[in-house]
Length: 142
Image (tube, rainbow, N blue to C red; front, side, top):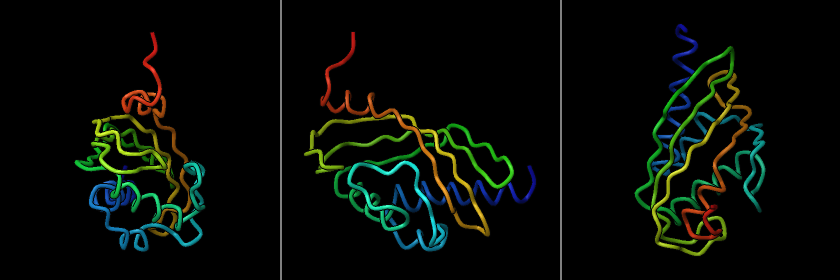
């Protein structure tokens, strides 16, 4: 708990609300360290901060009605762990996938290490299988 924990939660919330949902890549400089390390690079993605900018920009080309709802957020030391639900409509090319016009929602777990008010490292696990199934790119199981 305490002020430190609240600060880490605020940074995580700004990432979802201002960067992911609004697509404001300028905020990346405010809360992401120049030496940022991404452990969950998407296929063909650039590493670090540049990769994050490209990911956000491509998401805003390919997805409309984007929302990210935080289900749970836990702070431990200099790390914040977040379970969230991302929803949107796949209306343009995204991650190399042509528009399907389909709605999607998937859960993600993020683990972010923060130092001096900026994210320095990120690990993430998302339900890629569920996402691809919703877009009709792989057949439904069962």
